[in-house]
Image 1 (spheres, rainbow, N blue to C red):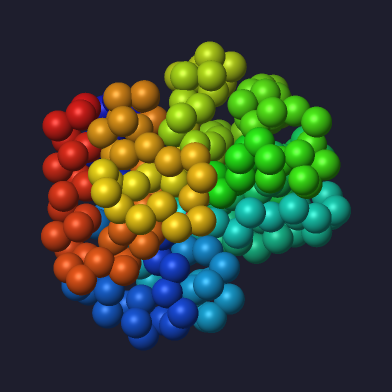
Image 2 (image 1 turned 60 degrees about the horizontal axis):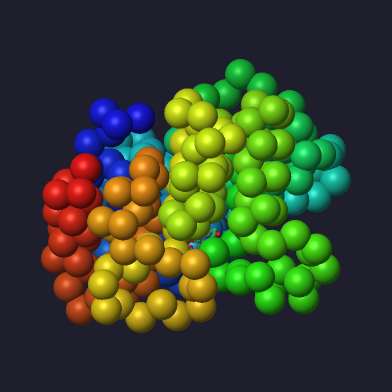
Length: 233
Ligand SMILES: O=c1ccn([C@@H]2O[C@H](COP(=O)(O)O)[C@@H](O)[C@H]2O)c(=O)[nH]1
């Protein structure tokens, strides 16, 4: 995936509470951002028609709904979301869920990404949630299962890129939230790397929310990240 242009590797998380504000931000960012992620906040506030519109206007869309339910419900949810024209859609990396997602996607074009372990978790959080494995082992296991089941890519921390690449190979996309330009506030993210570190590690796509959306100059912040990606490629 080394042929992906630097700009198309930046996915801006549109974590914005309403469609009007999100549309204004997209207009302000203009050509500086080609790829947007829509998750709970905007999606549950009427963001799906915006996702469809942006896809129709040539932006790439990542629907980050992290689906996880009984198989029938996951399959039907994926079937509905597959009609939007998105590039990526997330499910949690549980084998039953991943198999159901593939069934629900059918012949649609959307690529399925499996969320391994949320980037806001560290080993202590995983233990508190009942997992006996350390995060890196859990990420490795889930990446292996995603590959075996036929998922298109994984979501993990950029810090796990090399272990994921080892098990997932070069054809699966590695998509990494928890990206923080040097000096940016980490907030609730616990497994972070800078854009340059993530590219050097070999990730395909970088997901960045607050460092762009909460910036006093979102376009300048997005351009600075694209520049950092270009230099590191
Ligand atoms: O493991 C994960 C999976 C998804 N996310 C999502 O990415 C963005 C990150 O936003 P920031 O403001 O840059 O922290 C957000 O929409 C999360 O839901 C993640 O962070 N970690």
